Figure 1 (cartoon, rainbow, N blue to C red):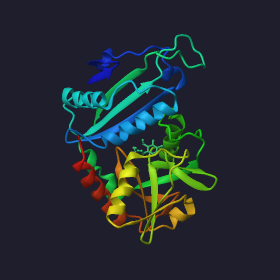
Figure 2 (figure 1 turned 180 degrees about the horizontal axis):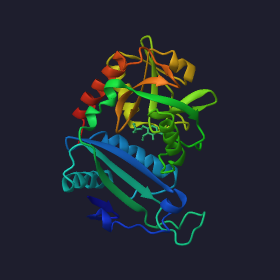
Figure 3 (figure 1 turned 90 degrees about the horizontal axis):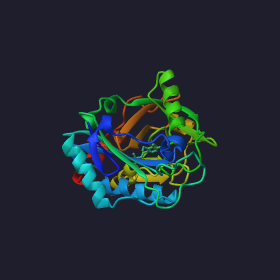
Length: 284
Ligand code: PMP
């Protein structure tokens, strides 16, 4: 695989980063994951806008222009002959020399890494046909979940807990309400309403979420942005989640209770179709 590191393309074995890099020592880095279908990039502008916002919230300068980022994405797709998969992008605050809590001086070059991950048939994930099962777990993450940092230890522990329980994923709960999934935004459907938590510092502002809500509104579907509880999810007609790599994924069980019929419902199924159709029209 050919990867990108700080201005150069190279075989992955040659891509080396300093042991003093703040991404490594402090988790001082942000990232984005963008899907590729048929060699084309989905939601490019949305992911770049969020990257710029994450960096600016952490007082980092965005090292490249959108044109540069796009050129790198395209070059990696070409060099790796990527058809379906993802592109991972990470910017860390760079090499600070000796370990120090203070940010390094302005002008310290960030570490910029991009690489591809091939996932043939990404849009035909068989799980979308049967739905996935989730457990709930307390949300013990920090309170700036709107910044997409690489500090993914707790979400990683949550996925391990879900797997240990024989399920696919975990939903975080804080003050009695669901915040989001371990790596996705979550929704329930009750009657004609699609219910999802409103944006704040409590959740990541999903790029898939933003587009899906737009497409759903255009299709005259009713949307309510508010928090919901696990009990409400268990009593809902349907549940689903969204993320850049899973698109729209039905959730059919929450903490052992079947949601609706226990099978993917018509709303989630239709939204998945609408999302894929609309976002494929806007690839770059
Ligand atoms: N919430 C969290 C915590 C996530 O990690 C992700 C995946 N990046 C999402 C939501 C979904 O965001 P997006 O649709 O931009 O992938």
